[in-house]
Length: 165
Image (cartoon, rainbow, N blue to C red; front, side, top):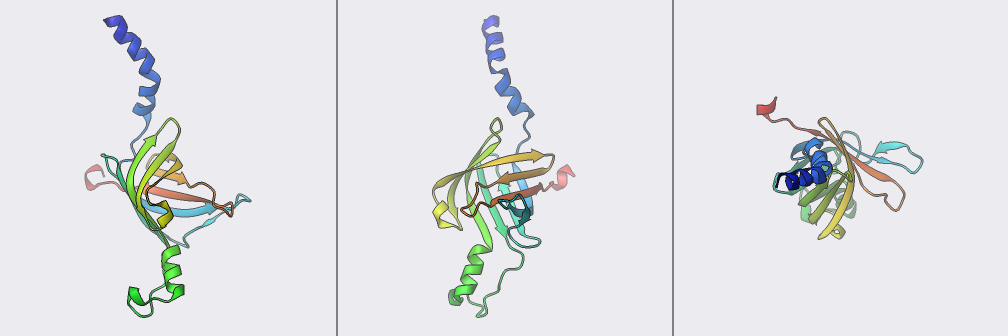
């Protein structure tokens, strides 16, 4: 019996040690950067100066991502049902929002978003996989390259609860 237990521990040790050493992404994260890397390697802002956003990962596997451009165009009519084509376009392109369930694979360095709904309807009911890095209280993930070759980069800082400060 002891030999079997020891064999099992030895067999599972590498997998268990990866999870034991991997910090959890569970919590609330504030957006600190929404950039893109151009095909020539230049890093530029993707959502303007000082974008706003929040990401929440729950312990039971749910998430919500909200990213907004800071300088969003106001609707001149004051009524979201009476916007101009330019106002609707700016509203659509000035945000990236989605929610659903998530899984993390620390060995591969990936987060898989099982998207329920998104501001970009083509993502509804899809799974989007992002490579990520976490250093201390900073979480960064990359979106696969767009048709223009740019690679969006989301940078977040963990919001500490009052109890952990």
